Length: 260
Image (cartoon, rainbow, N blue to C red):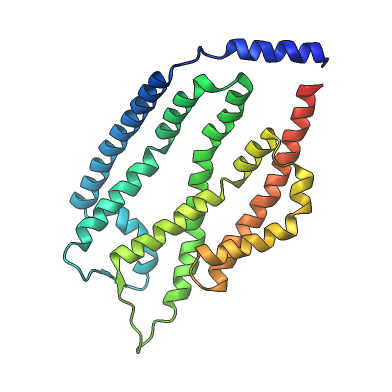
């Protein structure tokens, strides 16, 4: 592509931008998007909390499955603990279910300020981030949590009986699911940063050994203090890092085609 063609392309992109908005209009638009997203989150929160309290805790029962095989109950030592635990479950559930809509509101707010190329860059993030987040959460729920919790509960014997508080158990489980959901966003982050020119595949390859060290450090910080659970987190992270290199290579090839 010649320099003249590139200049015409940039001019056409600038002309295709939506008319600039005054600061007051930007603030009004931001308030509108926050109110819409907040209203939906609140409705989902009320619905999820009601279902959890009235229908015998279906969501908490889902999280309790690693304990059921051993017949270990969840206990509480404060009078208000069950109620506030159900509220937290309702909040987490509502945030999870409304995440695609919330991302859509972010897109609608940011869209007028983006060039056409930037809008195309935002779409993969918008479309793929939620499925990848779900995939990471499912991996944590079906693979990491059963093996990890079974390891910790294996110390149960006639002298040591577990007494698990429901709020602490929920916090640990939600944290693990959330972390694995974020971990699976790594290829999307790689795509985004490669398109912006911040990183490329050769850079990722050169820093692979440092990345592996960082991965194990992060796994040690975010997981319970045992090598087994840390390895269960570090393994997928290393695989996702390699996938990110492939994604970065594919993006670089496409950018060359667009520039030629």
